[in-house]
Length: 305
Image (tube, rainbow, N blue to C red; front, top):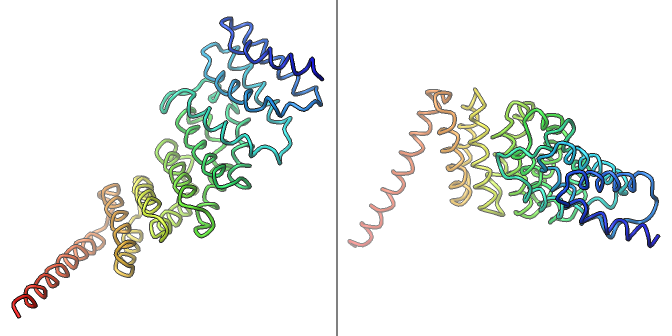
């Protein structure tokens, strides 16, 4: 057992060697270890997550291909109930790999991000609040670093759990809901065609979140996300009507967030907003000014007396 541990420790720096061949051999060795050995490798999991995910951005095809193969074998060797512990280091490594808009070569391989999926889903569905938050941000990071066609097979596995957690409004803290809304917005911005089957659910989720009583940050993020969604929706009048009604029937804090959502919707939808919906928006503004004017006139009258 000791010599296996020594070999694993030796191979970690070899995976960063200047020679591409040595980087490949280190990844291949670790893949074989994960596939064949029954020894406990839990002490090295975080180190190898960091190394293998980083190696997916290697410019040499043999290296990032070997790294993907090793990462796949590695994740499959970990018991499912121990995956949540890797969510935070995985997300931190993805965040530091490549950059938004720069496609990481290993992520864009066929099934490129598949080794990360079990870890992210475990964190999102059964993890702590911090793990749920980081899992959601990891999805957004992957969307920004993966070619659209390579991302397509994973849209359904990611979007469903994101929506389920987002709609459990009383269960999770604002930081978790904000991360989820951020991930969903990234998907709408970069791969809207693949997310289209979820548009009705996303619309309900964003409107509900725009009325979240617990957090202005959540309401603001939901208002932004609703605006992005409406860029791809031909029928927006029902949403406009719902937001107007909601703004009239809620307290000032919630009403303000719904008005922000309304502004984003109208700005994004443009000509798709119907004439009656436009007139309702204008009337809402006129009513708001009238209330302010009446209030000022009453104040002036009281001051005179």
